[in-house]
Image (tube, rainbow over all chains, first blue to last red; front, side, top):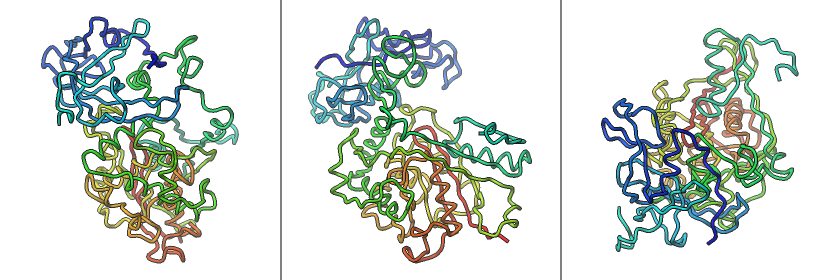
Length: 143
Length: 339
């Protein structure tokens, strides 16, 4: 499948790390240095403890499909169905990312499916997408 | 409008922040309560039909919306977390909430369809509705898929229209010769994260909080409600409101609307009696409060609950709700006789 059109994020000091993170193959989120809470979207203050020592930190890039939708409507000129997923990262309950699920047919996606991050580079931005986790053999995935 | 009518107002307010579209009405209630105004005209105008009809809304694309000069549009703020993944529409975002509800509670597409079918049945009795021809379950499933599990008729219909609501001081009811709707309670709470995809419980969204709050501010209970006018920008939102307002238990809205009888015009809880936004048209929330007032005043014509087409008790208590995702407002209205 060809690389789809993607709206680009407007980079700023708060989000730049996230959108450039895939260059070394790692997905990163902001994390509180005081209590370890992961923050997404990035915030200047930790909502769990009030700490201000917030820095990007790599995650495993693994998680599960929390929910998904297969889009059929042509919003951007493309007519090929694609899968939008909401992935919950293993690092923290509720740490979720809206993303695209790739590397499998839309009708193979299911809630609870184990996935891992893969990146699609467009310009300087590395879009974090998710694909079925090849290290998981259980076809039904996790919970 | 203030300029066009050369109105001299003691109080005015505009904007979209707050408890969904109902925030404007709540603001008016507060202004009247605080004595800043005695009567407030609250209105909303939508022109989405014209906007989409004359060449479509500005598309997402290389030459499309989003701003940022030439080349691809760039987004900061909350939209940067959805648009780059081609999750362009609230249809996409809410479809994931709906899928999660189906996963956790076994809600079925046939149950979801009942919101659209109920709206269409009621719209047939509403001369101002845009879609009035009958729709069957087969028709519903034959329509194209927008974004699973949403099909075309799970998405509301763009229209041009204006809705006006007059909010007046309570004692004014004695000055008019018709029944009025009294604002019994409002629900404006937002107790989770203000986010579409980081909300703690995807199956509830902020309807949960506004719905809970409205009952914290009245002695009435869900059992007292005669009619429910609950936002259906997408069909699933109405199901979340049925749960949030306590008409059924959490996760039980699917069985609650199964078959459609309970929510029909002559059912135990007539729902979206004008056809909702799915069939009457998208007046963006204001259509629901308008319809609730008509029903309480007994002016709903062929679709009047308690009238010839829906025999039973004339409604005295109405629940109104607007919004989805992290935006939600709820209101309980009661009938009060004029002089």
